[in-house]
Length: 417
Image 1 (cartoon, helix red, strand yellow):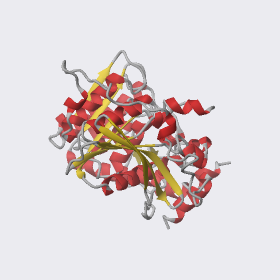
Image 2 (image 1 turned 90 degrees about the vertical axis):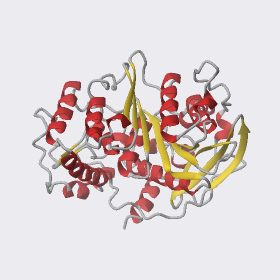
Image 3 (image 1 turned 30 degrees about the vertical axis):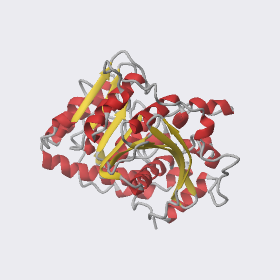
């Protein structure tokens, strides 16, 4: 029996069964199609060798800009259909809450909640430069997966509250960016809303994509934010959010997915690969092909030797350079590869991010470098999770908040009618 939460996707999958693009270009040896239900490409869906072969075949099949752009349009449509994002939900008022402002060295932090759909609150923290400027770039900071919360003190190293996220967001704010760090569904303050188990549902993919789009709405509503300088940056599952948002939303002008883009690994969580965005009767796309939909907008891939991005310098990065080359923009995509490092968003990965975003967004790198030119994050104050929570005893969850993910999905789908 098909899982109930996938049943709603079947009409969209059937739409994909009317081929407008043959997939004969894909090399032989892909996993067989299921006899029924959505086509899900999960975890190590391909071998590294097969992943490289698919990209080589794509380069050959889409050998010029016109061919690539035609397929890119088709691919965006199939991603939206597979994700259950056709049509997009109707935009409703965000009703933003911004409060509990703290002032630190060169930046401020505030707690934020807004309604991506009526009754569901996107939660996060807003980091702003202390000295406001007439025009400031925006950065949407996404986070990767973290261990489940078992006791209150676990929040101190959890996702949006982690020292890594605070260092990144605070440093970028000190450099001159307006940064919004948001929770995944079922993480951070979202746990109190819908519970941790909500994250493991396929509906998490379209909801997080929509939350990211509404986060851009929120950022662009703030005074002084420059709509021509909008970046998204995140690691692991947050990297998936980054390249999916960039593929679907043209308002993103700069993208920096960290330790995620792989030709053979498609994501290990329902929030990344629990819906049929990668394969149907008339399309196939591994994650580098989705990341290539950013072209010619500047993009940084940060990769390491200790996870599924180990082949990036010789497989995924050359593919993106080739696609960007169709636009005369091969220099706009870059790769920082750290062969001795593992799967995290540690200091060297953050350094790569700061230097890239400073160059692309016109940020002040000097604000986070010492006299020797090395990155120095020591002026960022790392808070415990308590002050970063949007909802607490003094600021309770609004009475009209939806407290079950099934109710959130029902509202979401109603807005698509």
